[in-house]
Image (cartoon, rainbow, N blue to C red):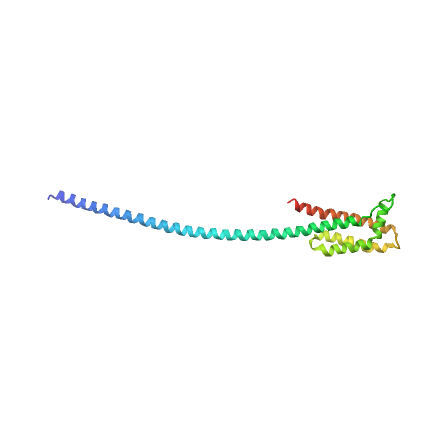
Length: 193
């Protein structure tokens, strides 16, 4: 065998060996990549499942919290509606009916003034029952009206209504009308949400 053939044989054997080694390395790397990809996918899926469960848990807790809050708001609205309805009924019960054909507003105020004691009692009962659902401003207005009725009852002596008592009766009526409008307005505003 000539030196030239020996060189070719040596190179051919090495080439074959290199080809076999290359094929084995390629197969080994492919298997490692596939294995690592599967491990990565499994870890990613586990992490995503964990995150999804945390999100579901948080979402469920938030929904339940919102349901409780909504139920409380519903109950509170019902109490506000009851307070507004009761007050409206109370306000209209205070207004006197016609007692004679020529009755005017001055006469109506005299009738209101003669009933200051009863009005004070009715307003006090209303305050005791519904104060919790009244705003600070509404409670303050109601206390002011209670004061007007409380002091005004001393200006009516044996059915004789002084000019001051008549003026207090008109003031009381005006304030009660404004408070009724405020209470009903608040309920209507909430109902339209």
